[in-house]
Image (cartoon, rainbow, N blue to C red; front, side, top):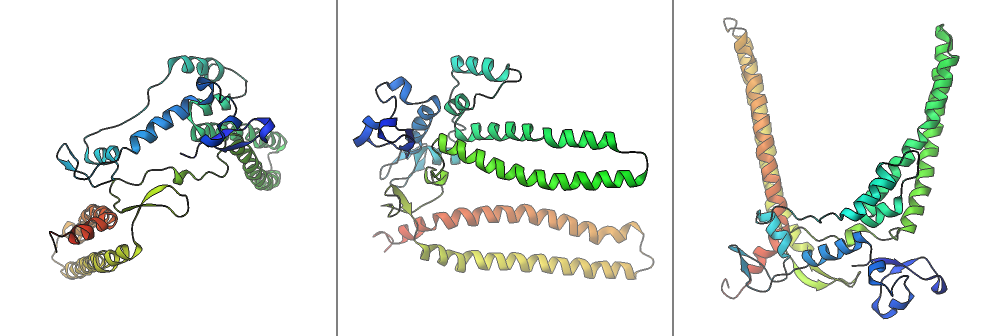
Amino acid sequence: MGLRKAVKPEFGGGTRSFSCEEDYIYENIESELCFFTSQERQSIIKYWLDNLRAKQGEVLHNISFLEGQPIISELKARGVIQQTFPLHEQRILGQLMKSWVQAVCEKQPLDDICDYFGVKIAMYFAWLGFYTTSMLYPAVIGFVLWMLTESDQTSRDICCVVFALFNVVWATLFLERWKRRGAELAYKWGTLDAPAESLEEPRPQFRGIKRCSPITGREEFYYPPWRRRIFRWLVSLPICILCLCFVFLVMLICFELQEFVMGIKEMPRLARFIPKIMLAITVTACDEVYRKIACWLNDMGESGATILQKLQTPECL
């Protein structure tokens, strides 16, 4: 999973990706209850669920799986499983309620939030608290300038210019200070150089050949680029061109109909809006149809390898 754990000070400190061969160098490795946080336990369980792979020819609820295909993700996509989510731990929630929600004028327990909800949630609330605190500076300066502003227009213009210049400086400093603060928290929580996409499961519609990644060393499904290019040029591109031509043709017809209607003087005034109404209805209908076509092309582009694999089976040959 690539979990990064804190290293004991005598072994250099900091964080490092967990390794069973060197498990003695990590802090709290002697205690199972203290070594894993609540969020890490949930992540491990979710990782197990996401990596339940189907065997060759396995069928469940009339759904045929490919060999090595993620089971839970496919069942979610087919609607067999509606949702999966972890249950809360009331004891920890009670502690966070006292130290975080009900606390007034106290710092947020970011480490406790990170241990329970994860790094993403903790980083969001860290940014929210940092932003709220930083807003005190423009609030104070704006109030002072408002008090100093007189009733004449010149005084108002000067105060507006001064406040605008202050906001430019404040915004620049705010971004730079948050970059530093965010980097500190990311290093502390062990996610500074850990790309999130490396731990994400591919879409259930994705098909490919199971192999060992030459970059990460982990198992992955490999989709040959030439197959994607074949589908893109022979299927996606012609369909997109046809859709564009259809829209262009409908637009020209509506414009011609509009000129024809406008040329008839005896035509009622309300009837002159018919071409515009037809164009609006056509655009709305095309938007819905084209969205479904785009989703179909996206799914077929990812599952195109399956079609080619089936065509290469002995039965088809």
